[in-house]
Each structure stands twice: as structure tokens, then as C-alpha cells.
Image (cartoon, rainbow, N blue to C red):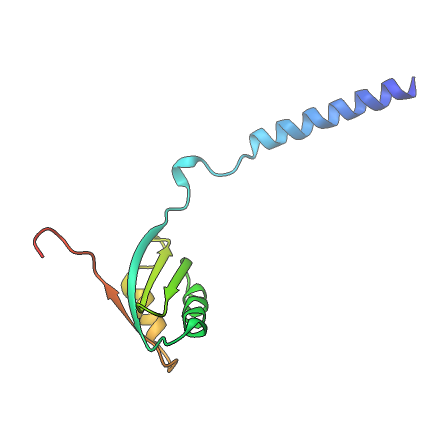
Length: 113
């Protein structure tokens, strides 16, 4: 009798938790985080350590989700949330202070350029 009661109570608890999970689902797909990319040109990077420092500095900025720097080309690919920041804000915040690095936004070329 105890085993039957235990299994019944377990089933009721599982059903209740599933019901709660359905009612409290994560935000709908239509409001998912949007990620946009931009390219930066960063001067002053001369080694892998510099690239890592640039990446870490960018990742501290609000809205920046990912950054990949290449010290050989001086290019940095940045993924960001456009609801929180923009390429202009990223460059401005990055260039504040004296880090030895200077960033510029590489604006995408249009057909008119």
C-alpha cells in the first residue's frame, strides 16, 4: 500500500510541476534576443595577448555578447544586442580611457559606395 501511495504522490507532484512549467514558459520566440554583428578596426594590437585584452574589454560593455579579435589584421568582429547598444556606442565606450588601443567602426559598404 505504501508503494502505491508513494507512486501516486510522485505522479501528482510531477503533474503539478509540468502544469507550472507550461504556465511559466520562457518568453515567446517573438521576443527573443536579437544579435547583430559589426566589424571594428582596432589599432595597437601586436600580439595574441593584445587581441585577448581587446576582446575582454569589449565583452565588459553593455549589450556586447561576443567579440573575436585578430591581431594580425587588426579586425574585430563584435556581436551585440541592438536594443542595448550600437556600433557608435561600442566604439565610443571602447575608446574612453587610455588603453593603448583605438577602435573605429568599419561601416558596411552600400551599393552606392
